[in-house]
Amino acid sequence: MDMLNKTGMAEALREYIKNDRPFLGICLGLQLLFDYSEENGPVEGLRLIPGAVGRFESSNGLRVPHIGWNALQFQQSSVILEGTKGHRVYFVHSYRAIPSDANKDWVSATCNYGGEFIAAIKKGNVHAVQFHPEKSGTVGLGILKGFLTGNNSNLGKTPDLAEYQSPKHASNLAKRVIACLDVRTNDKGDLVVTKGDQYDVRELSEEREVRNLGKPVELAGQYYRDGADEVTFLNITGFRDFPLDDLPMLEVLRCTSENVFVPLTIGGGIRDFRDKHGRYYSSLEVASEYFRSGADKISIGSDAVFAAEEYLKTGIKTGKTSLEQISYVYGNQAVVVSIDPRRAYLQRPDDVPFKTVKLSHPGPRGEQYAWYQCTVNGGREGRPIGAYELAKAVEELGAGEILLNCIDCDGQGQGFDIDLVKLISDAVNIPVIASSGAGAVEHFSEVFEQTSASAALAAGIFHRKETMDVTMHLSGDPMQIWFCCIKHTLS
Image (cartoon, rainbow, N blue to C red; front, top):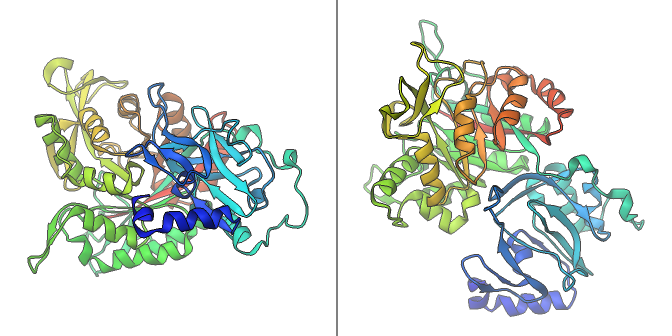
C-alpha cells in the first residue's frame, strides 16, 4: 500500500474498480481491497470492501501459515470459479479476511481453516481470490483463462450454486504427499537428478560416479503432469559454491516455471557471499535472484543453524540474518528451513542439555533415549544444537515451514523417524514436512496417523514410478491426502 500511495496508483486503482472495470486480484490483491490489514500495521487498504484482514489464530494449535491445497465453499455463482468444482486450490498465507453481514454481497466463496474466511470475492467485473490460481495447476489456469477471455467450459449458462459445491471430503486442508528428487552436477558437469543413501549420492562401483536418474526440468514437468502439487530444487552443494554463479540452476528454474504451474522451491547456498571478484552479495540478494528466476519459496539450511545458535545464545533478533531478512521482505510463507539431524544415542535423558526422546526402538547398544544433533554442510559437520531447539528458534526468527530430514533414515526405505517427526511437529505451530526413509506406501499413512506432520516427502519410491500406488493407498484414508511432488535436490 505504501508503494501504491506514493505512486498515486492507490487512488487510480480505487476509481478503476469503482467504475466496474475488469479486475482480478490475487492473494494480497484481495486483501488490499478491504478497510485495513493488521500485517505490519495496521495499514489502511483501499476501503472498497468492509472489513479487516487479520492473522490466523495459532493459539489453538492451528498451523500458520495456511499452506497447501484446500477446498472452496461457494456463496454465490461465479463464472471464473466454475472449473473448481470438486477440486482443491493452492493457498499460502498467514492473514485472511472474515465474512460478515457488511461484506456478504461481495463474497463468492469461502474456505475453512480454523474457521471460515473469505477465499474469493466478486461484484460485477471485479474479482479477487485469496488462493493462487497460477499455482493451482490446470484448475487455476482455467480460472485465469476464464477471466482473460470469458471462455469457460460452463460459460453461457447460469450455474446452479448447489451443482458445484465442493463435496464434503474436499472441505479441509489436505495432507501433502511429496516426491523428492535430488539434483546435482555430476563429474561431467551436467546437472542431473540423483539419489542419496544417508546423503551419499555416489554409486558403489569402482568409478564412484554420481547416480544419474534424469534431467531436472524434464522430471519436474513429468511430475507436474502426473499431478504434483509442488516442486523443490535443493542445491546440496550450495554450501561450498556461489549459487549465483550456478547459471544452469537458474536456467532450470526459469524453464521449469514456464511449464510447471505449481509452487517451486529452491534451496542450497542461501547466505551472504563474496564472489571471486570481491563483490559482496547479501543472502537477500541471492534469494531475490531465485525469486526472479521463478521460485515461490526458498529453503535455508546451514545458515539457519548458525542464526539459531546465535539467537539462543543472545536472545536477540538482529534482523540481519538471512532467515529474518528474507522473511521480512517476502513473508514467512516464502521461507522453508531444512533441518538435517542425526541420532545421538543416550543411556539417560539428562546426559545432554538438549531435548531428548524415549525411543520407540532401542539403539544399537540397547539405548532407550536419543537427542537429534543438527548438522551443516550437507550433513558433514555436527553442531551443538538439537533439532528441537533449532525448530523452536527458527520459528521465532521467521520460518514459515520446516523440512525435517533424518540422516539415519535417508535412503533406507524403512519408514520415517516417527519419534523425530512427532517431537518437532508437536513443538512448533508452523507446518512440518516429514522427510527421509519412505520405502512403502504404508509409511505415508503411518506418519500422518502417528504425528502432526502436514506433509510427507520421499524420493526413491517416486523414482520407481510407484506414485499411483501411494495415491491409491491413501485415497480411502479419512485424512485428506493430496499428491505433491516437491524436492529436487541439487547435491
